[in-house]
Image (tube, rainbow, N blue to C red):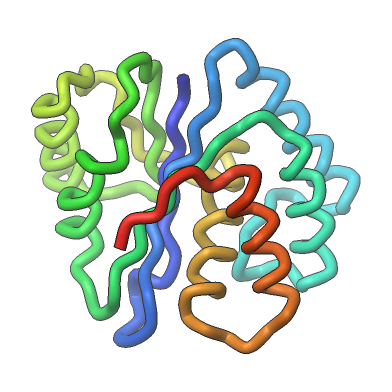
Length: 181
């Protein structure tokens, strides 16, 4: 099982911040990554990033995601926050699976941050060699986590949009398995 972690809204002073953990089983990761790259090519984008693509592209991307084999867990916290401290606080509650092969966190982080996350993982019995901080363009799973985090934050920030509500409801029924607040 691979775990990809991304966040949305952590820099804001109000609203919500969202941490999305996307889980993908080992047997299907190569197929999953190929599918995401295929979707991005079909949509004529280099790589999906929630904040930079228009709604028409988001909707097409989300529609295709619903057909893929993955689950997501989402943690929501009220702003303002200190992102590293919040992830350290909620990660043990969200990361309960035992057969984790690798964990990828979006964005290159300082070494002190990586050490803190490794301690959290050791306390949960997860090998610290399994944690990598990466660029979202490197891993399709991180881009999917970005999509889930962006959609969830938009929903919980209460932006009045039927599109957001529709897509969030669809993902909540099929892909998002847990929400922590």
